[in-house]
Amino acid sequence: MTTSFTMTITAEETIKSFRVVGELYLIGSLERGVTVYRQQVRAHNLVWALSQIDKDPKRVHEVAVIGGGITGLTAAACILGLFPNARVHLFERSPDLCSLQQGCDTRWLHPRIYDWPARGSRAPSAALPVLDWSEGRASDVAAEILRRFHEYSCRVSHERLQVILGVDHLRITGRDLQVEWVGRRATRDGEFFRQGPAAGESEVFDRIIVATGFGLESYPAQFRTPSYWRNDTLAQPRLDGSVQTYVVSGYGDGALVDLCRLTIERFRQDRILYELFGHNPEPIEEMLGPAAAKALAGENVFDLLRAMEDSVLKGARDELRKRIRKDTRVFLHIRGGGKPGNTSLPDVFGDTSSFANRLLLFLLYRCGAFIPRFDELQSIVDDHSLPSANVICRYGPSAMAHLATVFTDEAAFADRFREMKELRSQSVYLQSAPGVFPDYAKDDDRSE
Image 1 (cartoon, helix red, strand yellow):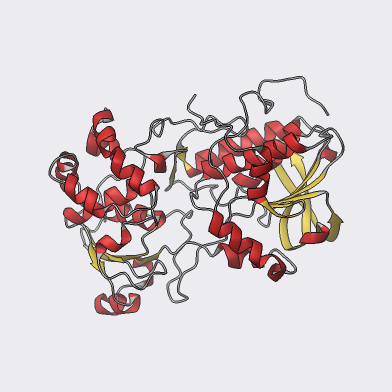
Image 2: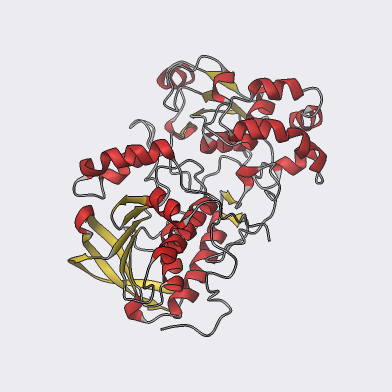
């Protein structure tokens, strides 16, 4: 078991970090540390904290969970487990749950890959009390999450879980805890939920949990980059022997993963670090620890990595040099992440990506695997006559703009949203003690 456990944050403090106003809560949309695992931990922590302060957890709670992705499913399942008489309405705009990762075979999910080289970061299992999963293709993880959610849903009466799919319109009146929507109530059909006819409805809830995530990625209108979670062939060798030129615009984790896919032969996100540093790299991990700690604290680590280049990193650099693709030429456009003041590559080794990806970026640069560019994106495209398909924009979503589409009066909560974004105080360590959440895969004695 590698799940982190700490009781240094009280239930009251935990709830405060999620509360927008009254019984309206927001999970993770304005936080850093955007991973599936960390969002699930946040969902666990919020529901656990609510159960700790509730004077009568067995009373009937009418709860709305907005968002049917992995975070929303986790929050809904946690509520069903800890509040035996809660009735949950789960809203999802897509016609199916967990739609973002479904069918995505080109992305790899690992619960703690962005924590490397911290202790426990290589453990393949999320080891979560609710909706647990192990590393794998995004499509496989989504299938596992849906299977486990089905187990939870089958253990409660139909009245306790209402799933509304294909939501074409949803607005929250926050202070009144009212949700109005046009959507399709779903029924369980085997392991799936099937949507029924559309209807417009509204209801007042005792509690609303917003788990809509961060919205879809933004990009310039002329470059319609597919979502990070859509399948593509960027990592596959060219079959016609030609050399293709690409530009990756941005320098967050999504951009750097795509940079690696375009520049490293046989790149697999789950294996690359072990292949470069050896399959038993504990001594290397210990030596990289100080740099990783500075990265976690948001510091720029370029100079630290440069100081290690001819010692700790030499073997990895030499191994990577053998793996540089010959069928691609790649520009990394590093004005696309919202900081036009960047004038040199070291500027982007701050807190915009994980330490593992910054390390790979440094090694790729030393191997001459890409060309940094600081001018306008359109200039690069024009200079090399690049087709739109060869322009990958990874700027991430605008969470604030996304939230504005959910609330009838977003301006009323704008100050609180800005405060939450500044504080970013939602813990990514499990706060509940082992055994608090019922295991619906094993425990047959459940309240209905």
